[in-house]
Amino acid sequence: MSAVLYTSGDLVSFPFGMDTKEQKPSQYLGSLEREAKELDIVMNFLTQEEKKPAVELIAKSGMEFVKTSKGFSFPGATEENVKPLCSI
Image (cartoon, rainbow, N blue to C red; front, top):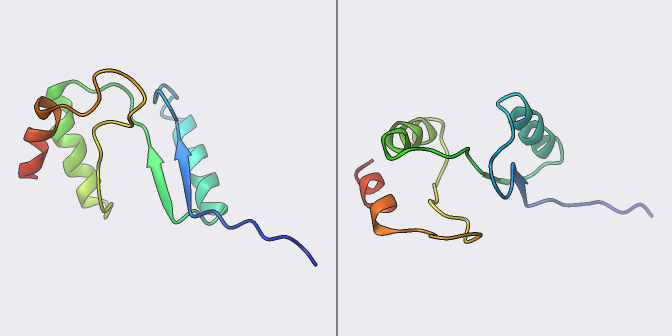
């Protein structure tokens, strides 16, 4: 009998999001090959001005949700970070 690894979710560029734009696709394609059903992709640091267009692109791609903090470091999810995204 062989073991089957079922991957329900996978992390990409965790925890800091500092991988290059060439490295991230390799990571998430590998996750999809492992049949991940959910991806937690950490984006590189974004300014307040960059966050809204980033979330708009994510929404257009069919992603179901976006989070503003991974709970890994200070300051976490703040009202300042979340409020502008609620109108998208």
